[in-house]
Length: 368
Image 1 (cartoon, rainbow, N blue to C red):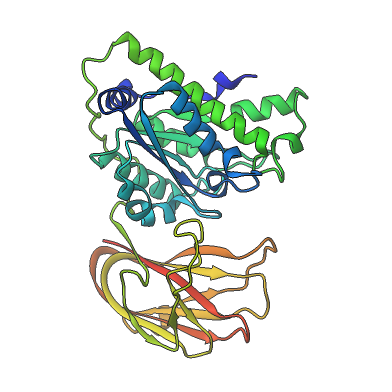
Image 2: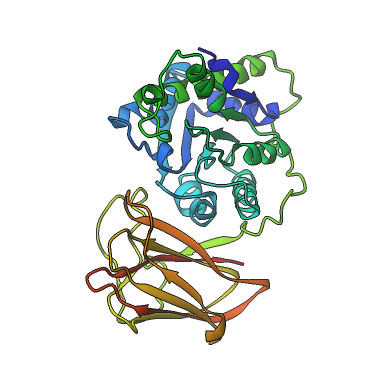
Protein backbone atom coordinates (compact mmCIF):
# COMPACT_ATOMS: atom_id res chain seq x y z
CA UNK A 1 0.00 0.00 0.00
CA UNK A 2 3.10 2.23 -0.01
CA UNK A 3 2.30 3.57 3.48
CA UNK A 4 6.01 3.61 4.31
CA UNK A 5 6.62 6.01 1.40
CA UNK A 6 4.83 8.75 3.35
CA UNK A 7 7.67 9.02 5.89
CA UNK A 8 9.88 11.71 4.41
CA UNK A 9 12.00 12.08 7.55
CA UNK A 10 12.13 10.70 11.09
CA UNK A 11 13.79 13.92 12.17
CA UNK A 12 16.47 14.37 14.80
CA UNK A 13 16.24 11.29 17.02
CA UNK A 14 16.31 13.47 20.12
CA UNK A 15 12.74 14.61 19.40
CA UNK A 16 11.10 11.21 19.12
CA UNK A 17 13.54 9.69 21.59
CA UNK A 18 12.60 12.27 24.19
CA UNK A 19 8.93 11.56 23.52
CA UNK A 20 9.32 7.80 23.98
CA UNK A 21 11.43 8.35 27.08
CA UNK A 22 8.68 10.52 28.55
CA UNK A 23 6.01 7.90 27.83
CA UNK A 24 8.01 5.13 29.43
CA UNK A 25 8.95 7.14 32.52
CA UNK A 26 5.65 8.91 33.18
CA UNK A 27 3.18 6.43 31.72
CA UNK A 28 1.32 9.35 30.12
CA UNK A 29 1.08 11.13 26.79
CA UNK A 30 -0.86 14.28 25.90
CA UNK A 31 -1.18 14.84 22.15
CA UNK A 32 -2.75 17.83 20.37
CA UNK A 33 -3.59 18.01 16.66
CA UNK A 34 -3.49 21.51 15.14
CA UNK A 35 -4.75 22.16 11.64
CA UNK A 36 -7.71 22.90 9.39
CA UNK A 37 -10.81 21.00 8.30
CA UNK A 38 -9.04 17.70 7.58
CA UNK A 39 -7.66 17.68 11.11
CA UNK A 40 -11.08 18.68 12.42
CA UNK A 41 -12.46 15.59 10.69
CA UNK A 42 -14.60 17.19 8.00
CA UNK A 43 -16.41 14.56 5.87
CA UNK A 44 -15.47 11.65 8.14
CA UNK A 45 -18.66 9.74 8.95
CA UNK A 46 -18.00 9.74 12.69
CA UNK A 47 -15.50 10.89 15.30
CA UNK A 48 -14.05 7.41 15.52
CA UNK A 49 -13.34 7.56 11.77
CA UNK A 50 -11.20 10.72 11.93
CA UNK A 51 -7.46 10.21 11.51
CA UNK A 52 -6.79 11.95 14.81
CA UNK A 53 -8.89 9.43 16.73
CA UNK A 54 -7.53 6.50 14.75
CA UNK A 55 -3.93 7.56 15.37
CA UNK A 56 -4.59 8.02 19.08
CA UNK A 57 -6.00 4.49 19.11
CA UNK A 58 -2.81 3.26 17.43
CA UNK A 59 -0.73 4.86 20.17
CA UNK A 60 -2.88 3.20 22.82
CA UNK A 61 -2.10 -0.19 21.25
CA UNK A 62 1.61 0.57 20.98
CA UNK A 63 1.82 1.79 24.57
CA UNK A 64 -0.91 -0.16 26.42
CA UNK A 65 0.41 0.80 29.85
CA UNK A 66 0.35 4.54 29.10
CA UNK A 67 -2.58 6.90 29.61
CA UNK A 68 -3.09 8.60 26.23
CA UNK A 69 -5.00 11.89 26.08
CA UNK A 70 -5.88 13.51 22.76
CA UNK A 71 -7.23 16.95 21.93
CA UNK A 72 -8.33 17.95 18.43
CA UNK A 73 -7.66 21.65 17.78
CA UNK A 74 -8.54 21.53 14.08
CA UNK A 75 -10.67 24.39 12.74
CA UNK A 76 -11.89 24.34 9.16
CA UNK A 77 -10.68 26.91 6.60
CA UNK A 78 -7.89 28.23 8.82
CA UNK A 79 -4.19 28.71 8.12
CA UNK A 80 -0.97 28.68 10.11
CA UNK A 81 -1.41 32.46 10.43
CA UNK A 82 -4.44 31.91 12.66
CA UNK A 83 -2.60 28.95 14.17
CA UNK A 84 0.04 31.34 15.52
CA UNK A 85 -2.68 33.42 17.17
CA UNK A 86 -4.35 30.51 18.93
CA UNK A 87 -1.40 28.23 19.67
CA UNK A 88 -1.17 29.36 23.29
CA UNK A 89 -4.84 28.99 24.19
CA UNK A 90 -5.74 26.05 21.95
CA UNK A 91 -2.56 23.95 22.11
CA UNK A 92 -0.03 24.84 24.79
CA UNK A 93 -2.73 25.23 27.44
CA UNK A 94 -3.12 21.43 27.28
CA UNK A 95 0.59 20.96 28.08
CA UNK A 96 1.11 18.40 25.31
CA UNK A 97 4.26 16.37 24.79
CA UNK A 98 3.39 15.68 21.14
CA UNK A 99 1.84 18.09 18.61
CA UNK A 100 0.84 17.14 15.06
CA UNK A 101 0.65 20.17 12.75
CA UNK A 102 -0.97 20.27 9.31
CA UNK A 103 -1.77 23.41 7.32
CA UNK A 104 -0.37 22.32 3.95
CA UNK A 105 -3.62 22.56 1.96
CA UNK A 106 -4.79 25.81 3.60
CA UNK A 107 -1.50 27.71 3.46
CA UNK A 108 0.11 28.67 0.16
CA UNK A 109 3.76 29.03 -0.75
CA UNK A 110 3.57 32.83 -0.26
CA UNK A 111 6.19 34.43 1.98
CA UNK A 112 3.66 35.32 4.68
CA UNK A 113 2.73 31.66 5.21
CA UNK A 114 6.36 30.58 5.30
CA UNK A 115 6.79 33.12 8.09
CA UNK A 116 3.66 32.07 9.98
CA UNK A 117 4.41 28.35 9.64
CA UNK A 118 7.99 28.74 10.86
CA UNK A 119 6.84 31.05 13.66
CA UNK A 120 4.33 28.41 14.76
CA UNK A 121 6.93 25.64 14.81
CA UNK A 122 9.34 27.79 16.81
CA UNK A 123 6.69 28.60 19.42
CA UNK A 124 5.86 24.92 19.80
CA UNK A 125 9.49 23.79 20.00
CA UNK A 126 10.29 26.50 22.55
CA UNK A 127 7.64 25.20 24.96
CA UNK A 128 9.07 23.18 27.83
CA UNK A 129 6.30 20.55 27.71
CA UNK A 130 6.49 19.81 23.98
CA UNK A 131 8.95 17.01 23.27
CA UNK A 132 8.18 16.52 19.59
CA UNK A 133 6.31 18.15 16.70
CA UNK A 134 5.24 15.94 13.78
CA UNK A 135 4.71 17.90 10.58
CA UNK A 136 1.92 16.33 8.54
CA UNK A 137 1.38 17.35 4.91
CA UNK A 138 -2.08 16.59 3.58
CA UNK A 139 -2.68 16.98 -0.13
CA UNK A 140 -5.13 17.88 -2.85
CA UNK A 141 -6.36 14.96 -4.96
CA UNK A 142 -6.78 16.88 -8.25
CA UNK A 143 -3.32 18.19 -8.99
CA UNK A 144 -3.57 21.47 -7.10
CA UNK A 145 -0.39 22.42 -5.29
CA UNK A 146 -0.46 23.54 -1.68
CA UNK A 147 2.31 24.50 0.71
CA UNK A 148 3.75 21.02 1.34
CA UNK A 149 7.09 21.69 -0.36
CA UNK A 150 7.58 24.99 1.48
CA UNK A 151 6.52 23.43 4.79
CA UNK A 152 8.84 20.47 4.35
CA UNK A 153 11.80 22.75 3.70
CA UNK A 154 11.12 24.56 6.97
CA UNK A 155 10.50 21.32 8.88
CA UNK A 156 13.77 19.88 7.55
CA UNK A 157 15.60 22.99 8.75
CA UNK A 158 14.47 22.08 12.28
CA UNK A 159 15.10 18.35 11.69
CA UNK A 160 11.47 17.52 12.49
CA UNK A 161 9.58 14.33 11.55
CA UNK A 162 7.77 14.76 8.22
CA UNK A 163 4.83 12.79 6.79
CA UNK A 164 3.71 13.52 3.21
CA UNK A 165 0.28 12.09 2.30
CA UNK A 166 0.74 12.80 -1.41
CA UNK A 167 3.42 10.10 -1.60
CA UNK A 168 0.74 7.51 -0.82
CA UNK A 169 -2.53 8.90 -2.17
CA UNK A 170 -1.36 10.08 -5.59
CA UNK A 171 0.46 6.86 -6.63
CA UNK A 172 -2.52 4.77 -5.52
CA UNK A 173 -4.78 6.77 -7.83
CA UNK A 174 -2.25 6.84 -10.70
CA UNK A 175 -1.97 3.05 -10.59
CA UNK A 176 -5.74 2.66 -10.54
CA UNK A 177 -5.82 0.93 -7.17
CA UNK A 178 -8.24 3.55 -5.86
CA UNK A 179 -10.58 5.94 -7.60
CA UNK A 180 -10.39 9.59 -6.43
CA UNK A 181 -13.85 9.44 -4.82
CA UNK A 182 -12.79 6.40 -2.80
CA UNK A 183 -10.11 8.49 -1.10
CA UNK A 184 -11.64 11.97 -1.09
CA UNK A 185 -15.18 13.29 -1.19
CA UNK A 186 -14.27 16.51 -3.01
CA UNK A 187 -10.60 16.32 -4.08
CA UNK A 188 -9.64 17.75 -0.69
CA UNK A 189 -11.31 16.13 2.31
CA UNK A 190 -10.52 12.44 2.83
CA UNK A 191 -13.16 9.75 3.02
CA UNK A 192 -13.14 7.29 5.90
CA UNK A 193 -10.66 5.23 3.86
CA UNK A 194 -8.46 8.30 3.42
CA UNK A 195 -8.58 9.15 7.12
CA UNK A 196 -7.63 5.57 7.95
CA UNK A 197 -4.61 5.77 5.64
CA UNK A 198 -3.44 9.06 7.19
CA UNK A 199 -3.55 7.40 10.61
CA UNK A 200 -1.54 4.50 9.18
CA UNK A 201 1.05 6.93 7.83
CA UNK A 202 1.48 8.52 11.26
CA UNK A 203 1.60 5.07 12.84
CA UNK A 204 4.34 4.05 10.38
CA UNK A 205 6.37 7.09 11.40
CA UNK A 206 6.02 6.22 15.08
CA UNK A 207 6.98 2.58 14.52
CA UNK A 208 10.07 3.47 12.50
CA UNK A 209 11.13 6.03 15.09
CA UNK A 210 10.55 3.59 17.96
CA UNK A 211 12.76 0.97 16.28
CA UNK A 212 15.49 3.58 16.07
CA UNK A 213 14.91 4.55 19.70
CA UNK A 214 15.27 0.95 20.85
CA UNK A 215 18.72 0.83 19.27
CA UNK A 216 19.74 3.56 21.71
CA UNK A 217 22.09 5.48 19.38
CA UNK A 218 21.48 8.92 20.89
CA UNK A 219 23.67 10.09 23.77
CA UNK A 220 20.70 11.88 25.30
CA UNK A 221 17.25 13.04 24.43
CA UNK A 222 17.29 16.73 25.28
CA UNK A 223 15.62 18.74 22.56
CA UNK A 224 18.04 20.21 20.02
CA UNK A 225 18.62 23.98 20.20
CA UNK A 226 16.66 26.03 17.69
CA UNK A 227 18.64 27.01 14.59
CA UNK A 228 18.61 30.49 13.13
CA UNK A 229 15.27 31.09 11.37
CA UNK A 230 14.83 30.88 7.61
CA UNK A 231 12.21 33.67 7.53
CA UNK A 232 11.56 36.84 9.52
CA UNK A 233 9.40 34.78 11.92
CA UNK A 234 7.28 37.84 12.57
CA UNK A 235 4.46 35.89 14.19
CA UNK A 236 6.21 34.28 17.16
CA UNK A 237 4.73 36.70 19.70
CA UNK A 238 1.05 36.70 18.79
CA UNK A 239 -1.93 37.23 21.06
CA UNK A 240 -5.58 36.67 20.16
CA UNK A 241 -7.95 39.22 21.70
CA UNK A 242 -11.60 38.18 21.85
CA UNK A 243 -14.42 39.11 24.23
CA UNK A 244 -13.27 36.53 26.78
CA UNK A 245 -10.10 38.49 27.49
CA UNK A 246 -10.55 41.91 25.88
CA UNK A 247 -13.08 44.73 26.33
CA UNK A 248 -12.80 47.42 23.61
CA UNK A 249 -15.16 50.38 23.46
CA UNK A 250 -18.31 49.36 21.56
CA UNK A 251 -20.72 51.59 19.69
CA UNK A 252 -23.54 49.52 18.22
CA UNK A 253 -21.51 46.30 18.29
CA UNK A 254 -22.51 43.64 20.83
CA UNK A 255 -20.36 40.85 22.26
CA UNK A 256 -21.18 37.31 21.14
CA UNK A 257 -22.22 35.19 24.10
CA UNK A 258 -23.55 32.20 22.16
CA UNK A 259 -22.53 28.72 23.17
CA UNK A 260 -20.86 26.36 20.72
CA UNK A 261 -17.81 24.14 20.55
CA UNK A 262 -15.01 26.21 22.11
CA UNK A 263 -12.55 25.52 19.29
CA UNK A 264 -14.20 24.00 16.22
CA UNK A 265 -16.65 26.91 15.88
CA UNK A 266 -14.58 29.91 14.75
CA UNK A 267 -17.57 32.30 14.71
CA UNK A 268 -17.85 32.99 18.42
CA UNK A 269 -16.46 35.05 21.32
CA UNK A 270 -16.25 38.17 19.19
CA UNK A 271 -18.50 41.13 18.44
CA UNK A 272 -21.40 41.66 16.03
CA UNK A 273 -22.46 44.94 14.41
CA UNK A 274 -25.67 45.49 12.48
CA UNK A 275 -25.73 48.91 10.88
CA UNK A 276 -23.59 51.55 9.23
CA UNK A 277 -21.63 53.56 11.80
CA UNK A 278 -21.35 50.78 14.40
CA UNK A 279 -17.77 50.69 15.64
CA UNK A 280 -15.16 49.04 17.86
CA UNK A 281 -12.39 51.22 19.29
CA UNK A 282 -9.33 50.35 21.38
CA UNK A 283 -5.69 51.14 22.07
CA UNK A 284 -2.95 48.49 22.04
CA UNK A 285 0.75 48.06 21.44
CA UNK A 286 1.76 45.95 18.44
CA UNK A 287 4.03 45.63 15.44
CA UNK A 288 1.35 43.78 13.48
CA UNK A 289 -2.42 43.96 13.77
CA UNK A 290 -4.71 41.38 12.19
CA UNK A 291 -8.50 41.10 12.24
CA UNK A 292 -10.31 37.77 12.29
CA UNK A 293 -13.70 38.39 10.69
CA UNK A 294 -16.48 36.61 8.85
CA UNK A 295 -17.16 36.60 5.12
CA UNK A 296 -20.44 35.21 3.81
CA UNK A 297 -21.97 34.18 0.46
CA UNK A 298 -25.31 35.72 1.47
CA UNK A 299 -26.27 39.05 -0.06
CA UNK A 300 -26.26 41.90 0.55
CA UNK A 301 -23.13 41.59 2.68
CA UNK A 302 -21.82 44.41 4.87
CA UNK A 303 -18.49 46.24 4.60
CA UNK A 304 -16.24 47.71 7.27
CA UNK A 305 -13.00 49.60 7.42
CA UNK A 306 -10.12 49.71 9.90
CA UNK A 307 -8.38 53.00 10.73
CA UNK A 308 -5.17 53.11 12.76
CA UNK A 309 -4.17 56.31 14.56
CA UNK A 310 -6.91 58.23 12.77
CA UNK A 311 -5.28 57.90 9.36
CA UNK A 312 -8.46 57.48 7.36
CA UNK A 313 -6.59 57.77 4.05
CA UNK A 314 -4.73 54.54 4.92
CA UNK A 315 -7.68 52.50 6.06
CA UNK A 316 -8.17 48.84 5.14
CA UNK A 317 -11.53 47.78 3.71
CA UNK A 318 -13.11 44.51 4.87
CA UNK A 319 -15.78 43.42 2.37
CA UNK A 320 -17.81 40.56 3.86
CA UNK A 321 -19.04 39.37 0.44
CA UNK A 322 -17.53 35.90 -0.04
CA UNK A 323 -17.32 34.66 -3.63
CA UNK A 324 -17.50 30.95 -2.78
CA UNK A 325 -20.81 29.25 -2.00
CA UNK A 326 -19.78 26.46 0.38
CA UNK A 327 -20.40 28.52 3.51
CA UNK A 328 -19.05 31.30 5.72
CA UNK A 329 -15.31 31.92 5.91
CA UNK A 330 -13.32 32.82 8.99
CA UNK A 331 -10.91 35.29 7.41
CA UNK A 332 -7.71 36.69 8.94
CA UNK A 333 -6.50 39.97 7.43
CA UNK A 334 -3.34 41.94 8.17
CA UNK A 335 -4.46 45.56 8.62
CA UNK A 336 -1.34 47.18 10.09
CA UNK A 337 2.38 46.41 10.10
CA UNK A 338 5.26 48.40 11.62
CA UNK A 339 9.00 47.97 12.15
CA UNK A 340 8.68 48.07 15.94
CA UNK A 341 5.98 47.47 18.51
CA UNK A 342 4.34 50.71 19.65
CA UNK A 343 1.03 51.98 21.00
CA UNK A 344 -1.72 52.65 18.45
CA UNK A 345 -5.37 53.64 18.46
CA UNK A 346 -7.58 51.39 16.33
CA UNK A 347 -11.13 51.82 15.10
CA UNK A 348 -13.14 49.31 13.09
CA UNK A 349 -16.40 50.74 11.74
CA UNK A 350 -19.16 49.46 9.47
CA UNK A 351 -19.30 51.54 6.30
CA UNK A 352 -22.26 49.80 4.62
CA UNK A 353 -24.71 47.44 6.25
CA UNK A 354 -26.03 44.17 4.88
CA UNK A 355 -29.66 44.62 5.90
CA UNK A 356 -30.23 41.29 7.66
CA UNK A 357 -26.58 40.20 7.47
CA UNK A 358 -24.43 41.54 10.36
CA UNK A 359 -20.71 42.24 10.32
CA UNK A 360 -18.92 39.79 12.62
CA UNK A 361 -15.49 40.28 14.20
CA UNK A 362 -14.24 37.20 16.05
CA UNK A 363 -10.96 38.57 17.34
CA UNK A 364 -8.14 41.05 16.94
CA UNK A 365 -4.69 39.50 16.69
CA UNK A 366 -1.65 41.48 17.77
CA UNK A 367 2.02 40.63 17.28
CA UNK A 368 4.47 42.37 19.58
